[in-house]
Length: 253
Image (cartoon, rainbow, N blue to C red; front, top):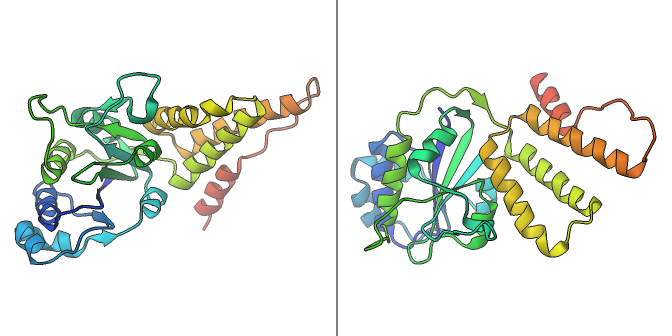
């Protein structure tokens, strides 16, 4: 099964942190990450109850550290986009659909839960690979932070043994950077750049690429780049991508 990390982004109330730790342990999850949390004292410990170990072992990280150490990042949000013209918060998936997306993966999946008062920022959501939302009732759609953690943990409990090794965060970022540079080559309009790269991240993020698939996309982009630079000339032999070479080197350590 993938290694699932629960990430609380700037939680405001220590009681919610304690309750989140408790419900995580209820469903077999123990890796709790806190980003710029409030002070944690006795109330959090009391709310955690027999999950005090999860609370004590919680790690404080920055957002950048979470992204760099994750194979995939899931943003949970109740504020959604309903138009394909606004891709920041779409496409979105239910917790059950999230399970289907990640259950066969081998890697670290970090799930972001936003602040109690205003959730995750657009920039934090934009960086994520997958968007997940809990389908609450319109008569009272706001759900407590720890309850949201509980719903997600329930859906992801007892995942089967993973089958697909994911590309690393470094390999995916290398690919996104290459695609971004390619947009310059094809004179992609600057005012569309942000939304285009968000769409690219959404599509490739839910495709669950392996390192080899990343390398193949790099190769296709390079061949296209070469054709732009030297039209009509005979194509050179294919060279391994940097990420592929790095992967092979790691395999030989």
